[in-house]
Length: 325
Ligand code: ADP
Image 1 (tube, rainbow, N blue to C red):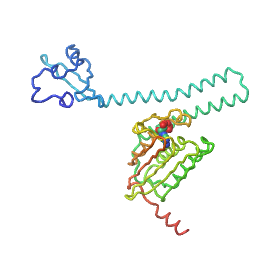
Image 2 (spheres, rainbow, N blue to C red):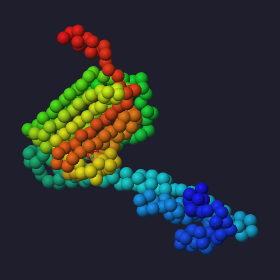
Image 3 (spheres, protein in one colour):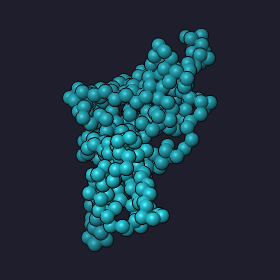
Image 4 (cartoon, rainbow, N blue to C red):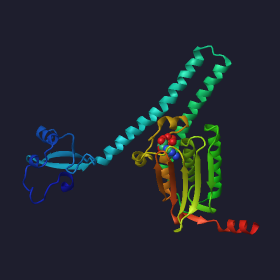
């Protein structure tokens, strides 16, 4: 541990004074102070800018002028704490914005004598802001359920046809609302299959990808959705769009909570910045892989690839439909 934390050499460093071995001013000041009621935090020996390591070092005096030095790697704890702080700040910010707007309208309604048209407009905007907060809270609850819940078992099967039909309906409805001239929406539901997993989670993931494609693709653009069985038995769900695409530097961060490339487009179309974080969690919980490919100016392609063990063809249904036709 001392090698990992301080870079000590068990042979060479024997009987050396610690101040000669660890050249950290904060540690030297701490050791010289004689006050060991608390620890001191210093960078680890192998700490770099790209991979910072933080050590908590605590001295305990004992015996005749002897000291025992305890060191612990607190990098992960500090990172988790930083993430928690960021998350709380983000959530507060996301809620504060619509709340401020709502409060403004309430004040207007209370103080100004509005005519019927103005009043209706005010209430419509208030409804929009409260819906935004509702969506945010729903997404937050979904995320927390995904993080805390048990991994979906392999015995609960969800049929792809019903799942995809529901997502197609949602996409068409959304396209009608946000793009008066609509999009070209192509759905290829592929072979009838079942996926082992929780229906609500699978719906949440697939619907997020499909609605993102609709939301970010300009009017008249193409959104293509497909489900195929790969040769090795895995099942691939894919959504391709001809939207603005995403620059490569953003790709690794897309699934972080609240990470957005186009903040205003996200807000205008009711985005929370949590959609892809939910997709990633659902994929992970089902042992599936989330793939994101995109070329700026040309479009994006999001795929979820389910392992063969979680996918099976609906033979019975196929047999019936073949005999009917
Ligand atoms: P949001 O609610 O903002 O859409 P997401 O987590 O679903 O949040 O997506 C994160 C960001 O990824 C979006 O803000 C957007 O910038 C980008 N993005 C997601 N899907 C697409 C897409 N199909 N085309 C272009 N950009 C996309």
